Every structure is written in C-alpha cells, then in structure tokens.
Amino acid sequence: MRFDKTIYKNEVVFVINESFVDDILACEIIKDIPKNKKIGIDMRNVQSVNSSILIELLLNNKIKLFNLQSELLSYFSIILKDGFLKSFINHSDFSENKRELVKRHFLIA
Image (cartoon, rainbow, N blue to C red; front, side, top):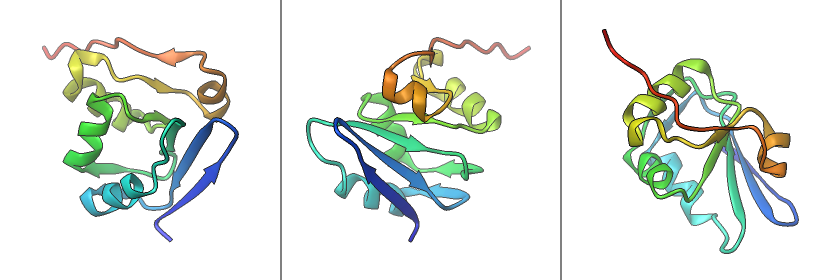
C-alpha cells in the first residue's frame, strides 16, 4: 500500500509510505478524504514531490503537512503563497493545533 490511513475522532491522518509523491498518489488520497474532518499528511518518508494536485490542496488549505524533511519544507515554502505553507512539526502539534510553522520567507541572493 502506498499510504496508510488512520481515522481519529475529528481528524484523518495519511502516512505516505513512498519516497516520491506524484499525481496518482495524490488522487488516491483525495478519493479517501472524508468531509468535516481535519486532514493531515505525515511526510516523514517522502523525499520529493511532483504533484500539481497536492500543491493545489495545499494552496486551498484542504490538508496540513507534518514531519516534513527540511528540503521539502524549503521547497514548499518557496513555491507556495510566498512562504504561507501551514505545516506542523509532528502529529501531536497537528492534533492540538499548536506550534504551526507559518510565514517563512526565503530570499535568493
């Protein structure tokens, strides 16, 4: 299985088991998204992303990410909303909605 899905009381967490996220994997996740629940994706195993669908979900704040590799965190911060990627350090922070990483700005010199 390319990802695992865990349903909690008010949230759903997807743990991606692949090192690469593409549009096919993003479509599989989209079809499993329930309504009226907070959606989180655990990115601890992901090394790279090439998915316009995932980018669109992030731009529309449909999902939150946590356990991001530093390279992916930098990548998303540069390409999304001028640094307005909302992500969390770990699952605990995601569940409790605290210590959210927001508004990071990178300058290229």
